Length: 188
Image 1 (tube, rainbow, N blue to C red):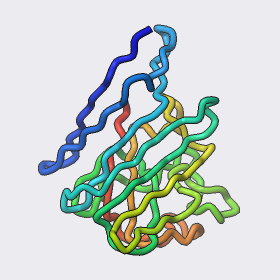
Image 2 (image 1 turned 180 degrees about the vertical axis):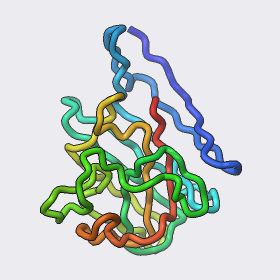
Image 3 (image 1 turned 90 degrees about the vertical axis):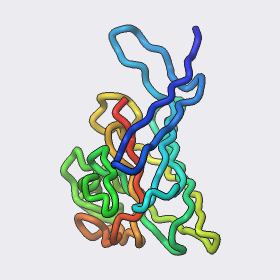
Image 4 (image 1 turned 135 degrees about the vertical axis):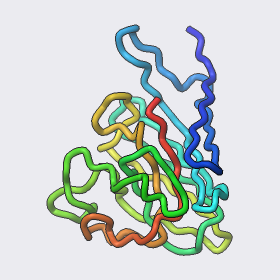
């Protein structure tokens, strides 16, 4: 069976063009009645001025029960920041409000410390951008997937970096502040 290389581009505003590549060999073949399931996907992230802010790579575990989200960021303010998956696959600068609220298919409240449960778009912790304005962190979650059509799939949403850390409890945003960088996760 041969694998092919896919390159997709998604226009997110009049001044930005996001492109990403799905590397050879990461698409798993399935029967003709089911769409292929992605094993990994890399999405570029841009600042509100269109500057390259790095990327996010989504990778499912071999058994499909865990999604690893690795964010490699640059050109961002030093300090602690929150990352969330937002509802809409739109990153219109400068405020990125078109991305909507946090991805929340189960209508839960915000925050990993919330006893009522958390949004599917909430990450389990914050990350730090260092003195060189760069940072890298990997989140591993069992409540998101790359499976097309699955109600908990990240496909067809966006990934957002916020100006501050998430307090992990305040509904609906975790007091994470403004949206400073965004990447569209295509629906495929």
